[in-house]
Length: 444
Image (tube, rainbow, N blue to C red; front, side, top):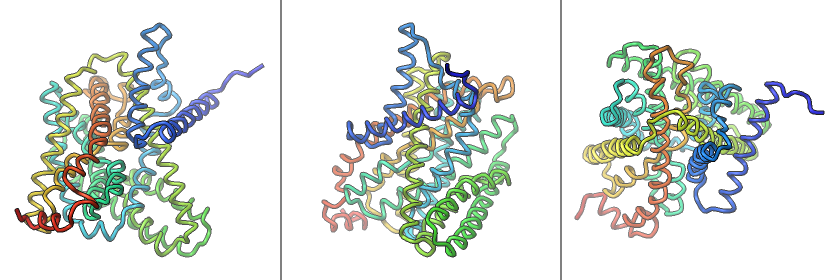
């Protein structure tokens, strides 16, 4: 006769169930569909949310797994401290530092002032058109939806043999604007949850302090790990050191009051470049890359499954999930991206290296949203974690619906139409190289 299930056994059972579901999703994506994995995950998130609602409508009853997961520890802190570090470390580890530094000016321009402009514009439009009274909550939405995720687009770039400089711009911007967006989100979330006043000078100082602090800490930890790895030749131990570095750089930075995101990204950059080239054997490199790719697969799966479960809970109790909310959020996201891609690209072409005019359309349309916005949405605290009367408690459901709508549109519409846009603009291996060079010079 089975014994009563303890809370620990209950939690482990749910975790195993989510892991099994993630593997099942991967199997279907690999064997049944031709959709890129991130796009397929978006569909899965929508299906989970709709299925739970259907179950309730037909009288079977809602599963309410979102609230159940929060009870066993799948809360907003777990999302931030457990899910974000490997995503950031893995992305930074695959970025070529030499190519990043070659284009560092344009990349910083898009990733720092670009994210600030996008946050202000998206938050302002979203708050104004949706009647959100708290400007800080509206800006919070702008910050979480501004970071881009190039995973699907970069795969298309490789297939289309897009120019290396364009790939570097898109990938480098994503790496840096993830850091900028999360830092800005964290500052705004602290202000919203504590009710503290956040003036422009205070916000600027906080941003500079946590960014520079995270950069220095991540650089120091990365060099320390690199020095240790150079003296080892054990692929399992070196992989464990990289895992400790990914989480340790994030945790220590947050404890010290600086940016865990920037700290982890900087550590990943150093290990992915100096570490792989000078301190790791081929076997160690393969082990580390395979391990973090596996973690990345699981984390992405969990994030989209969890947002689907959150949405199913939200839809039971909120009238905010309206067509107007979704349309305004998507429109604000696109307007914010256009306000960054086109003016900034024109300005950079005036003062620096002139790049093909057609690239600006790819920078606009290829600025997809993915796992980082989803992780930040899930990091928003629920009403039980907020002071009484805090505006975020009432508006969190609206932000979840609007944010997932933006990610869904980005991956399902922009992600599936980027390839035709590349062909239309003749960007890639097929077009005449001379024509691209002529466009870069601004010739008619």
